Every structure is written in C-alpha cells, then in structure tokens.
Amino acid sequence: MSLTEGILCSKTHEYLLEKDGKYIIGLTDYAVEQLGDIVFLELPDVGAEFVKGEIFATIESVKAASELYMPISGKILEINEAVVDNPEILNESPYEKGWLVKIESKTAIIDSVDLLEYEDYKEELA
Amino acid sequence: MTKKTFLHDEQIKLGAKMIEFAGWMMPVSYSSIIDEHKTVRENVGLFDVSHMGEVYVYGKDSLAFLNKLVPQDVSKLTIPKAVYCQLLNKNGGIIDDLIIYKIEDEKYLLVVNASRIDEDLNWMVRNSLGFDVSIDNQSHNYSLLAVQGPKAPDLMEKMGLKKESQPEFFSIKMAELFNINLFVSRTGYTGEDGFEILVKNEFSELLWNYIIDEGQEFGLKPIGLGARDTLRLEAALHLYGNDLDEQTTPIEAGLGWSVSKTKTADYNGKEVVQKQLEHGTEKKLVGLKMIDKAIARHEHEIFYNNELVGKVTSGGVSPILGENIALGYVKNIKDICTGGIVQVRIREKLYNAEIVKRPFVEKKNKI
Image (cartoon, rainbow over all chains, first blue to last red; front, side, top):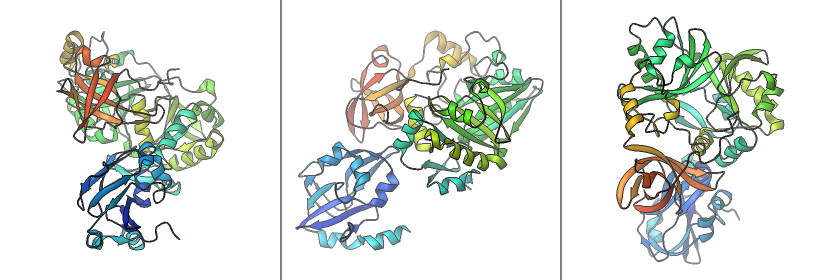
C-alpha cells in the first residue's frame, strides 16, 4: 500500500487521513520538501478545538516560519511529541513518523469536500 | 524582470531550489541548508554571488571622493588591500555597506549589495560634483564566485594558486586559474577563511565547473543563499536591509571598528558619527541567544521589564551551536546590553533570550 493512499490534501498542503474513526493531520511531502530543513514545530494542546481553516500549528524551517491550517474542524486528541522534540523527522517521514495531530471530527465528511486526493493534489501543483 | 546570473542553468542542473532575491533568481539551497552550512564550516563550499555589484572608481580625485563617502580613512589603503566600510548619508545613516579594494593608484573596486546598486550609484553621482572622478558600474560584466571554508586554501592551491601566492586576508590580486584571468580576494561573508573570485561573465560557467570538479576531493558542495544567511548570522555579519539601513549609523550597528578615529578629511555624516563616538548612542546592536524554545525573526519585538526596548533584525537557527540566535537593536542601557535577560515577542507570546557577545561562532578568517 502506498503511503499516500487514502489521504486528502488541502491547497495549503496539510493532509488528512482517516484511521479507525479518527483523523490524522500532517504536512504533505511537497510542503516538507519546499520548506527544507524543519527546525521548530509548535503544536496545539490536547483538547483544543478548531474550526476548518483556523491556524492550529506553526512550523519553522531554517528559512522562515509558516502557519498550518486545519483541513477540517475538530478536537485535538493526541499530538506527536516526537516531532516536537525532533522536527527533522518531518523531513524524513512526513506520512509515517512525521504525523502532527490526531483529531476527532463530527463534520469531517462535509468539511473535506474541497480537499483533493493525492494524485489530484500533485496535478494541481504541476 | 527578474535577472539570471550566468550560472543559473548550471545551478538548476545541480538541483538548486531557486528564489527571487534583490531582483535576481538565485539558488536558496541545493541539498539542505543545514548540510550546506556544515560543509562550509568543515570543508569548503562554492557560492554564486554574481548578483553583487561591482563598481570601479578611478581618476585623479578618486581618493578624495571615496574619503568623502565613507568613515574609513581610504588614504590608509594601499595596493592590493581592501577595507570594509559604509556609504553614509548626511545624517550618518547607512546607504550601503561595501568593500573597497585598491587595485591601482587612483583606481578602486567597490563591491556593493545587489539590492542597493541603484541607490549607491545615485548617491555617488550626486556626491561627485567637483571631483575629477569616473564611476564605472561593471556589475553586468562580472560574475562573482565565493570559495569558502577551511579547505579553501588547499583547493585554490590545487587549482594553481600556490599558498604562498594566495592573497592575504582582505587583499586582492590578479591571478590566472585554468588560463582564465581573474581577480582573487581573501574575503567572504561566512566567518570562514576563503576567497572571492571576480571573473568576466563569459568565463564564469567554465570556472564554476572547474571548481566543482577540483573541489570533489575536498568535499566541496555548491551552497545557496539559505546557508549564506545562517553562516553570516553565526559570524554576526550584518545584512543590509535587515541589520543596516538609512536610519542606522555604523556606531549604533557596532561597526565603530570600521570608523577612523583619526581621519582629518570631512565625510558625509561625520558630525553625527563623531558625536555618537563621544557621547554614545540611544540604540545599539546586540546578539541574542534564545533561552526558551522559539526562533526569533526579523521584526519581532524585544521587551525588558515589560517595556518595549527594541526589535530583532535578523534571527534564526545556528546549525553549529544547535541554538536559536538573533541580532537586534535595543536601548543602549548597560543592564540590557551586557548579559541582560530580555523577552522576544513571537506570535503574541513572550520568550526569554539572553544578550550575548558577538560573534556567536568564532571567526576563522583572521589570518
């Protein structure tokens, strides 16, 4: 199975993956590649709630800081402490070890209508 | 219209990520900024800095003219030496920072920032009235390559410039590499030993590829502007537009060492500069090391005892120290400037930082 199978991507380069009724949010390989060396990551607190499009995290590469936007609305269930401690994990493994947060969402299906499947996302970038 | 250097296509072949900088398409990185940074600190790196401007100033009054423009005493400059200085406006504000090389009697080469070439030329022409001097912008004819790192002297030797004939620190010489005539100077913007090579555009691609080939055994890699910025920040070298501008004097910027205290000739801004040398300044450039885990960036505000006391002008990571560092201006109060603990406001939150000595990483280029 490909790492990107089943993922949905936003135009701001966050990805969404449903797993066992929860949703994993991360940053696409394209975004990670563009950012270059990632050196800092600020993730929200567990329990925090966000609506689709809200800023939920900040990521900094050597070059600059960027903000990350919620691809769907939801409540943070878990954050990836390992990437906070070692942000370079994101460069190495954006889809496996480099996930950012896990959330629960009641509106995922409606919220994800404007998200793109990976192949279409890649095509948009080209 | 964005300009391309003569090495643009070679950089694309090497996998460069390109960005626009000061009106030029320039490589920001090839592999990874951190990897490129370490390559320059440990081995040797090759930079294309052809966006920089080259201006010749020559004629009977060239010395008097340059002495009017900068606070350094250009009369002390002898062939083939170079001096770092600033073009000042009437208020002592910095129009640009530059290196002046004395090439011949009554002939100087000025290497200036790409983003400031137009302002520099305007200012020079406006100040040239009454001087028998020619101002010859040659930026479009030259490429500038920088070879930087501890292994740079070995690489230059392998390319035909023996160590005993290599220019000394802050000197320049005409040389021949691979049958190409060029200027080699012992200067750079990394805090490492190294050279800058000024070559006519038509030979730059040939030279670039020779250096890439010959550099393999020394671990040479091409280096982009991203690492150029982290390298200069660790060495606490100023970046025009961030750390220097027309509202800032060399004394405020911690560049008092590049201001002559004995120069008798008048120069633009001298009154302000002299006053600041005697009575001090209200703001001062300092180095900051983040205590809390956050990265200070350009324009972030600095607080001391809940009072806004300054702004960060450059900030980022230090790949060598593994810490976050910054340059900024703060109120010139001893408690702040010597080891003070301040707070930097980053995304609406305050993070502690310590004022530390500059440079952050020891310079290796004083030979």
